[in-house]
Length: 253
Image 1: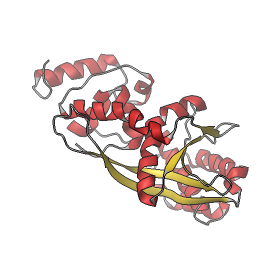
Image 2: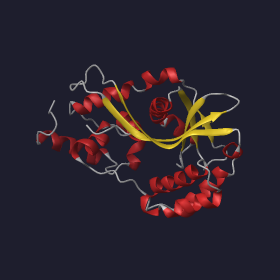
Image 3: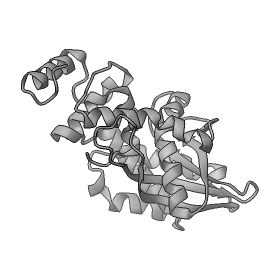
């Protein structure tokens, strides 16, 4: 199986069919304008946290347009300026041990995993902040979604948990969960209440659904994520499942 990306873990838990089709059968998940707009904004945010000024950060975003061709750059720039002007993002007391850092690590498979192989997790940590007054490393993730911020925070749980593990291994210190930053909203800071010690429990459904994928057991659960899926509907997904079973690609039982 391909590496599991932290940003896909929520989909993996909610609807194994979507991730199964992507990884097992090569169905592409190219993302759309919203995803590209977020990537553009991330590029500028990373630039200011690595020493560039606001104008230079906007130039950096423009320079990498090929990486996010569907992006609404006007929207991305507006979100970035809100982010850059927020006091906590300008505070000289903040340091950023990691910014847009690729991580790769493995977690143990579930007991029922037919392969018994480690699960490879690979992604990019937005940022790890170290506040001088607190003395703790915390992982934060910027989210440009238009959804309600508390919902965004809660749906980012698997992603943040993975970032805490990967960042801890990268830095050699415990990186605790921070939360999400949502520049579309007046209050952009949404911390989480769960702790580093909860991560093993948080990732248990991920491990179990990976075990199911490795056993070629897929199922479809209609949920909010259907709006962003290529198939979007049980009217498409359930016949697709039946087709794969009839062809012998998936077990019939």
